[in-house]
Length: 263
Image 1 (cartoon, rainbow, N blue to C red):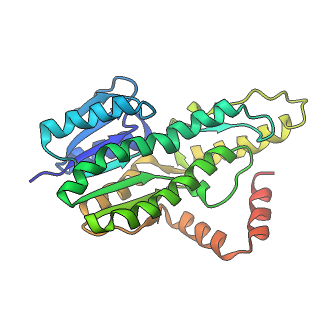
Image 2 (image 1 turned 45 degrees about the vertical axis):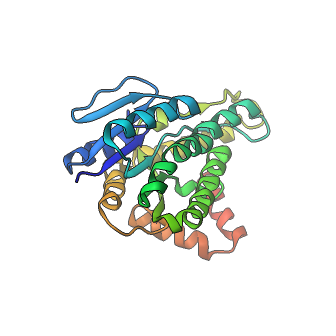
């Protein structure tokens, strides 16, 4: 019997690539995004992860038609660039609503069906930024750190119901995410202006020369097909080495290295 997969944030970047590869591998694929989106073989539903009612309705619609959701790939996300000191708290809340609470909404919607069937997989797109503080990306990194912690706790809570959870941590990835990142307008002559422009500029250059969305999607699809999953997977050999070094180095030294990278 074909597996039914729900992918959020399906209309671009990693989410779109995941949908394409799942369809190629003969999964039944449903995609959720705020804007209308068409892809051969994809069953698309317009819904907003920050709107619990719309997500509940979308999941209900899928289960009524297919009888199940075997796998959730929770991928919707956004980013902002701004100094912590001057970030509008409402902007930070908006980011957490999408990156963290949006995922919570989808997880809560699919869990009852998975739990009743005593099987399922939940795969969440986190980020290597969850492992280390990045200048002017603090709220994005914090939201992904919260997501990692959520994933670990989910594995403990859902173990008895045979539901497995995986956090996928890409590093720099070339997608439209770079262009869509919201940036606070900071005067070049201001306290943070020149520092932020230089730092964020280096990060965005790294993103646009980074791994492809297809490579990240390939890892996600691999675990959709496999019976067993790790709790966490960093994507890319270079990124796995970096994650290991971050874990190995004293916190102060790791922070110093990051500062030198983006100074």
